[in-house]
Amino acid sequence: MPGPASTRTCWGRTVAEVSGRRTFGPILLAGVATGALAAVASSQTWLTANGDAAGIRVSVEISGSDAAPLALALALVSLASWGVVLVSGTTARRLALVVGAAATIGVLIVAFGLDGDGVAGRALADRGASAVRDLSHRPWLWTTVVAAVLQLGALVAGFRSAPTWPSMSSRYDAPAAAASAADPDADPADVDDLTLWKALDEGQDPTAR
Image 1 (tube, one colour):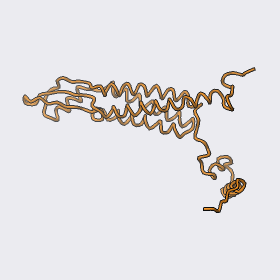
Image 2 (cartoon, helix red, strand yellow):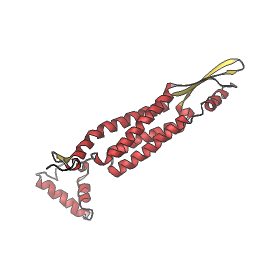
Image 3 (tube, helix red, strand yellow):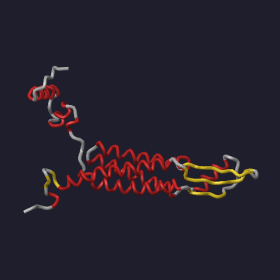
Image 4 (cartoon, one colour):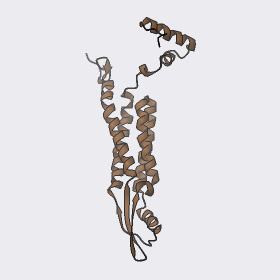
């Protein structure tokens, strides 16, 4: 009689492992895409405003990196967290995802707390204008917000699914490193001898260049 869903196997893998392999790619791609969009949008024009300087109309365009430099920095931190997820184990992945989520929440706080009048007023004052008129929040600001919300969703989904995600295979490790991992107490010289004998058993010539 079949056991619980969590213990069922499919070609040697548990259902959880199979499900994890299916979710890894989509969640990773969603996280990278939304993280990249948030970073790009954070560097685009967030505000436009007009003012008067001695009767002359003055216009300014203010990018997110000028209006709120912290938003761009946090968006890049969140994006970088997915790089850690790609090459790490479960514990490091979850830690990276928590850091990414905190950075993404920071982006949202900065975006929603932006003092548009103050930022525009300082930008216009630098050009000799005395008052802010026609202040406008550009679509890139709201794109940053939407991308950050979607990014947060991907980070949460990743945190929940991380234990079932596949890790990089040990076959990419150096032979000596792999042997050391299998037996941490092994002497380095013994590890080298083990690697040599294994190569001979497989019909390889360790002396060949």
